Length: 229
Image (cartoon, rainbow, N blue to C red; front, side, top):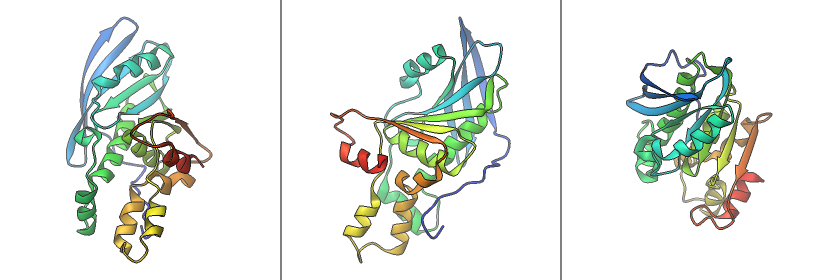
C-alpha cells in the first residue's frame, strides 16, 4: 500500500501439494512439494506420534541452509511434542535487493514478497494434516528466515507468534532519514515492504521472541536492539 505494507489474503485457497510419508519410531517424516506463486517449494514435515493433534511450527532457515540442515532443530521440537515443517526457501534464503527493487519499480512482484507468500502457503499445507492443530501454529525464523517469519506472521493474524533466532529488521527508516531527497517515494515503499520493523505493530497481542548471540558476526547487536525496542 502507500505506506509500504505488504498484504496477502488470509484465504489463500486449498493448497496444492504432493507428499511421501516415511514412518520412523516415534514420528513420521513427510517429504512435501507444494505450489506457491510461480514455484514449487520443497519441505519436510516431521510429526511426532500422538493420540491428539499437536501444535505446529514452521521453520524458515537462514540463507544457504536447506531443509535437511535444520532437521536437528526439527527433531528437538518433535521430542517436545511439536510438529515442525522446514522449507527450502527460494534461492536458499538469499536475497537480491537491486533486482527486487527493479521488479518493484516495474510493478512486478519482488522475490522477497514471494518468499513471504511461500511461508504463508507452508502454514496452509500444515493445516491440512489432522495430526496438526490448525489453530496453534507459530513460526521460527533463523537469520534471513526470521525476517520473512516476522512479516508473514504480522500480515496473517491466524499465525500464533514468532521466534526469531539471530535475526533483526533492516532499520530502513534510519536509511531513509539519512538519505532524504535521494530516495524516491517508490523506493521508500519498497524498502519498507521488506523490513520486518515496518510490521511489528501488527503482531500484538501475539509474541515475538528474539534470541541473539552477542558475538554474531553477520547481524550486529545494534540492529537487533532497534527491532527489539
